[in-house]
Image (cartoon, rainbow, N blue to C red):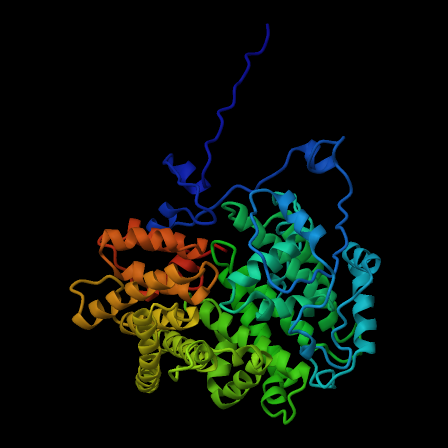
Length: 586
């Protein structure tokens, strides 16, 4: 007698918690909305590839080749041209058509041979294939290039470097493959990503300069490629996780990074510019992976702070009497790190390095002024040259106002998370700085109005700063004992919200703002505060950041009425740190 065939029931998709309760799961990773709402421990089954896949790897046997990244050529162009990225073949055509010639306006940054533009493509291919060879080459480069920054400093504690920052087996094995090569990723970074990350001309932007710098540092180059592949995947379509190409470069860069910081493995002087640039690309990598990995960002912030304090980089830059190329570059990178860490602090992720910069505000201001000297030449062509009949705020003044708003934003972050004993002092400080910023923003508002009256296009940075200022005012009002979207709305907040939406609408119509984090954050604040469905629909249509857009949708869909406090917002981002879902890791 034949045994009856037992047909196993297929388990439906979803987390184990919902499957056990026999309820429908929305499959939102790593925490589904039902578990977040009911404060349950959301458990997911570990993905296990088939036996054949584990034996032979991914992909058909006949078509699977050894993964060998192609060499990266020194691509140069004076102005970034718009690129249609409907298919990756067009990106490859860009690589083949770019002429290898020095970019105008960049020679004044290349001093003492520290930034050699040209490099052997054969050596680059070997670097990308073998991380062990990369470490040896980095050591050789550091021996050959001695500058003011390569001086003996206090040793960095290698044991304090958190392993969570670095990709080991997190993604390279199971992530999807985008199919792009490194030349396509660099072309996308140069032609699309860098122009969208700045309101300047692409060839004069900081990220364009960082690309040239990363080409001379193998460690930073890997982290840049990790960011470039991930941003290309986001641009081509919705992507919740970085592609396989991005994870592999992040892993290679992490291995070199750990070897460079290990005092037992090497005795050479540290390369501060390359290390801090790698830290910056780590921020840019983790900040674009939904949901925000709060644990990684917090430990990244602590690692940056530890390195800066160990090597006294703030004192090195702020106390420098001569503005060498290295100190200016390092000051620019430190300024970007302060901006990124303060932005993450809003979500309760990090903020240690930004708080250190706020405590040493005089050194931070000196570093900011030093970092602007990179763009001294380009800032000569200001609004005043376009309209010589009237005295207008210069580009430098607009950037100064914008940077002060960034520091105020972090002050409010600290105020919203402070214990009761620190609240009065932080409240007075924030009110004083906001009043000063309001006076500075009046000149920007007058500039925008005059440009409208004369039929001219106002500077995009001035519009972004005004939008950001109005969002900061609402954030300050709602940052502690109030709720975003709370009714009734005070008249002052209602007026500020109207000005915020008007400024945002005019900014979107003026120029691209998809990758400007502070403007995207301003749209998030407006979306959480407004009750107008028309305004909300427009905000969602222009909110391009996937993390912020998902967060706004969750607030509007799950909260009834749609209001939320800043503490609840941070619990959504990181329920582990706030004790909502014990035992769950992002």
